[in-house]
Image (cartoon, rainbow, N blue to C red; front, top):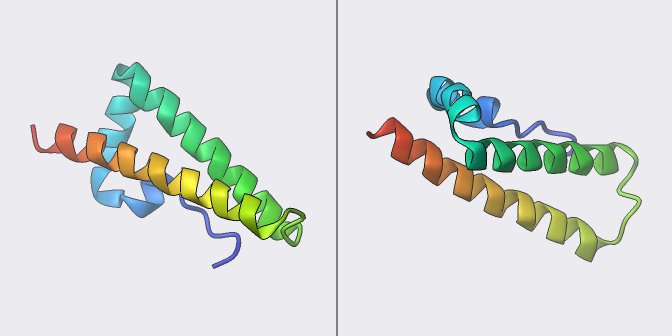
Length: 82
């Protein structure tokens, strides 16, 4: 879907407390989380503007977002299962 917000808190509501905790206590998680949210915002802005970029660039942005999300999910899952 176009312009869908993929914020971690929306996509992983079961990890809400873990997300908040790791954003305050884990510098790497916080850095990756901020990078993920900025990238998600940029993608949504491009979609709103009618994707003023080529398909390959948009694909790369979405692939980077997916890879970041996977990394963040693994950290969330590991923390949650402790």
